[in-house]
Length: 369
Image (cartoon, rainbow, N blue to C red; front, top):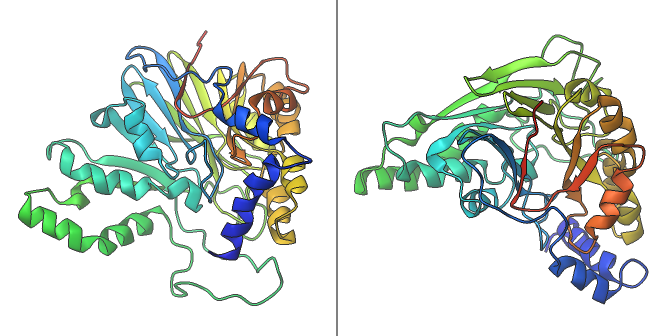
């Protein structure tokens, strides 16, 4: 087992051990049905947030699937990120694959991409060949790699194209699975998978952002996509060393939902989330992560620089943005050994709105004015 994987898996065990949570409490937390976490059928009218997966990654942990959210607007489905297990969760939530309008990718980390190609690859044989292609929006190539955080020399994978964007990801995934695809086209009459996807790389506005400098300078939200149900805007957020990293806002006649993607506390999030009905924000419990004591200095520094400490989200993002409901997702550590009540209390500091601790298959309505 690779060292980093072994270390991360130990985190869940350490959190449930003596000095953090008793085994009985950890077991109870993992087995209990938490507040606001009851999975219900998604109504076909109105706008509803469906949390398909709520764990940070990349290493899977029991109790939560990888990060993925769906917004269902009058029966149409819009996805944000596709972490590990997300395609199974799509089915478990009872969502209609034929109603899927578009997928939006916040950034190109593995825990946000793990099931993206799976969605396309396993879907294409079971959908009417005359149906519209699956539309995807996400980052283009970063353009540069950062220096190693350790200061030591490291190898570079695919040195001729070391920072591929979303289009390269899909194109190369199709090429890597060509044998299976070609067989199914010849043997089972499946259509050409390439006609089932329409990839759009989101252009970064000219605001002085760069992969080796300021990754999220102050800026106004910009348009990404719209149809007759939803208008999608985006903004850059700070998730070093990944560039670009986007947060998305969905405005509908039924209300508004904002998805932070991965980010540290970033002023642009307040700009994008202003007066939103629901803000889905990533959260890390740095106290718990540090207490586990099994991460390298580089890993701890990454968490501190790149993620939002749960104790700051309410007072520094949700409250100044005047959002009505703050939903915590992409929880790190993703183990269910940390009870929801703790997450909720920490996030609620300095925030007068409602706090919901996200759990898999949870359905929340948007409450428009």
